[in-house]
Amino acid sequence: TGMGGRAFEGLAAEGAFAAVLDFAPQEVTNHLLGSNITAGTDRMTNAGAKGIPQIIAPGCYDLVDFVGWLPLPERLKGKQVHAHNRLLSSAVTDASERVEVAQVICEKLSGAQGPTEIILPLEGCNEWDREGADLHDAEGLAAFCDEMRLACPDSVELSDLACHINDAEFCAKVLEIFDSWVA
Image 1 (cartoon, rainbow, N blue to C red):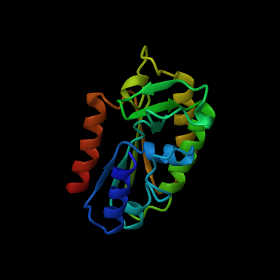
Image 2 (image 1 turned 90 degrees about the vertical axis):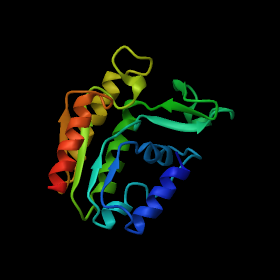
Image 3 (image 1 turned 90 degrees about the horizontal axis):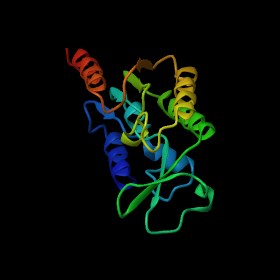
Image 4 (image 1 turned 60 degrees about the vertical axis):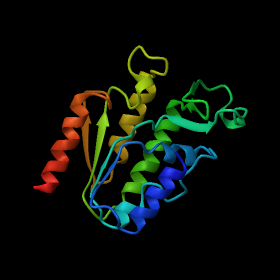
């Protein structure tokens, strides 16, 4: 969150990675919705610009982080909040914001010069959004997934998976793609 993503983007810009598995692009949402926990405007662009193969999944795309001990930022007031830990809390985005996040992610990936695959878990993308969990929003997830399919650049492969991001099927798909690249 913030510093980690910034360090990641710096290393990617230097071409320091053989491949990238980016399963938590939440900082894209943070930056888009004005969080002070941001990795900058170039989050999710440097690996692609260097032609580094990427496997992308939208972990926590639906959350906006903020410093947990500070008052809720004005833009996030009225939203459901998840206290992640004593330092970090996250506000849940609505369906229209999720559509905007999907558009931004796809736009960022449109410049990728290397193989890029998006894995789209149709049953949720963070531990708290599973069916029956506190942050479950089936309509918001469906809006995001629909927009990802519509906005996905032709140069990017997109795989729908009928599972949750934390399920074994997700891991199996990641390894299938990665192993095919290694072979």
